Amino acid sequence: MSMEPTPSQTIGPFFHYALFTEDLSELVAPGHPDAIRVEGKIFDGAGDIVPDAMVEIWQANAAGRYNHPEDDREDVPLDENFLGFGRAPTDENGSFSFLTVKPGAVPGPDGSLQGPHILVSVFARGVLKRLATRIYFPDEEEANEHDPVLASVGDPDLRSTLVARSEGGAFRFDIHLRGEKQTVFFDV
Amino acid sequence: MTHETTLAGYRRADGDPEHLYPEYKSTRLRALDKPLAIQPHTLSEITGPAYGHGKVRELDHDLTRQHEGEPLGERIIVTGRVLDGDGRPVRNSLVEVWQANASGRYVHSGDRHPAPLDPNFTGAGRCLTDGDGRYKFVTVKPGAYPWGNHENAWRPAHIHFSLFGEAFATRLITQMYFPGDPLFEHDPIFQSVRDPKARHRLVSTFDLETTEPEWALGYTFDIILRGRESTPFERPHE
Ligand SMILES: [Fe+3]
Image (cartoon, rainbow over all chains, first blue to last red; front, side, top):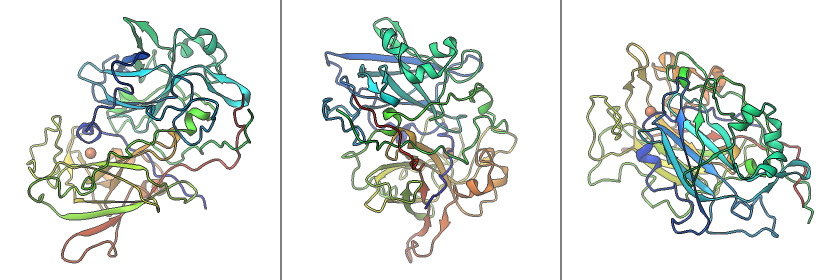
């Protein structure tokens, strides 16, 4: 029996007190030896910051395994303590920030290997359905070159919106919702 | 190691709003204006967080019992099932809700509506679906509230819902409305869903069975997440 999905609606502006009852921006403890910081700002089509968005991330662990039953590759270690999920609001400066580990490479279609990447969902007032994008890493040039999803984005300028920059010891990933500099969003 | 060919992606959703719906003003600067990039679903999209397990406390689903006293307003029960696109229950999955109080005011520093806050109502709840995919909240009916979108703009009464389903691909944030609301035709957020049949799927049903005598009106609202493709793609192997 096939059923039609319930449509999406905007998250609106008033979600914080319900969705941030705990800090979900740190996927690993601050002292973790492999911790990385991933941060950025969100901008609208006029170049103004978006201070009322919610960003969620989903990623594999450092070995490249997802904490999910569909990823049953027993030869890749699973870390039960690493859920791989994070959630952060943008603040009054339009900034979000996560503390996590760099994910390992994960398999792609047809025997390919995907470069290390973090999946991102953006929700905000004025955004009627989830925006999905991917964060790739600037120090993974070779892996990125062979990544099938990056390759499917033909235009190199567009592709570059998916790669974080190294900045002040962190990975910087700004998200532009609209306009010239718009980030590539995927039809997930 | 080689695996069987068993991974299947998720069907794309029909009936969602377009990103740009100019009548809803905030979309004008926030809607993307380049086409979405098409990608196949990979292991990354067909996995997703099992977040919320062990986090939900006993009274989190009862928004009328989170304070000393009882909130003002019309007490209601909202229940339904979370199903995948093939009608199978989505079990043990987090449902988060938030809403205005009976006067139409949110407990949020950004809400400037000059309607009273209720010291006995926060308006945030969560629960895990059971073995049938069922969730249940006890709350009060939220009030309509004005917003600055256009002259005399009012949101119909609604409850915000957040759902995960089983994969990154099934993540959904939506709003549940109440049957017969006269504000429907004036609300660009509701109307951003252009297909009337799809729009109807956002409206709960009054249900006498769920209604508890001398206590609370009952509404049912089933939530359908995207279904799995029937054709598996090649399972990654190394
Ligand atoms: Fe609302």
